[in-house]
Image (tube, rainbow over all chains, first blue to last red; front, side):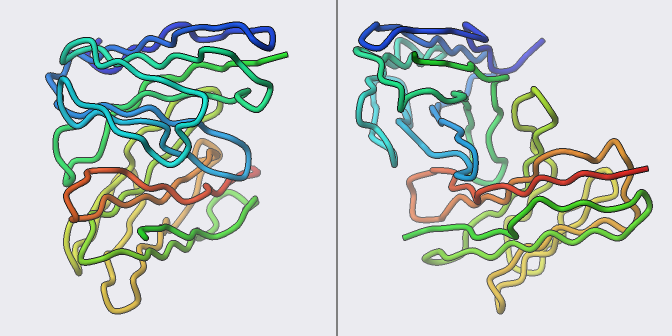
Length: 112
Length: 113
C-alpha cells in the first residue's frame, strides 16, 4: 500500500544505547517530518526536512539527529538514549500546506 | 508564535448524542486548518480540512467551519457512534512558508452504547 512506512514498530532500549528509526514514503512528497507523541502534550515536532538535502530543527530537537537520505527516506537517530525519550514516534510526509500530511503508523520506544 | 488550543478531554458521550470539540488557533495570517483522528493503536489519519475563511470541511458525518472572526475550527457531529471513539487532534499549517503542522494536545472521545 502507498503511504509512509516506519520501522521498527516497537523497541526497548537501555539508557545510553543508540538506535535509528527508519521512515520511507512512496508518494513523491518533498517534505518529511518526525514527531513525538506524549500523553497530554499532543504531537511535538522534532525535526523536519522541507526538501531532499535540507533538515531543520523543530520544537524538541535535543538528543536527536536526522538524515534525509534521499527523497523517499528520512531517518531519526538517538545517539545515547535517555528515559525522557520514551515516547511514540511518528514520521509524516507532505507536499502542500493545503493537503495536510500523511502519517506512518508509529514506533513505540521505551528506554529503561 | 503559531499555536492550537483545543478542548480538554476526556469526553464521554452516549451513542447518538451530538458532539462538539472546540478548537481555536493563533497564527500570523491565514493558516490551513485540519482535524486528525487517531484510533487505538494506530497512527493519525486526516479527518477533514479547510484552507480559507468560511470553508467547511466534512467527512464521515463530521464537520468543521473555518471561522476567521473567532479564530476557531470546532469539530461537530450530529449523532456519534461507538466506532467514533478515538483521539481527535486539531492542527494548523501557517502560511508563513515553513509548512510545519502544529497540533493541539488532543481530545480523547469515548462513546458508550
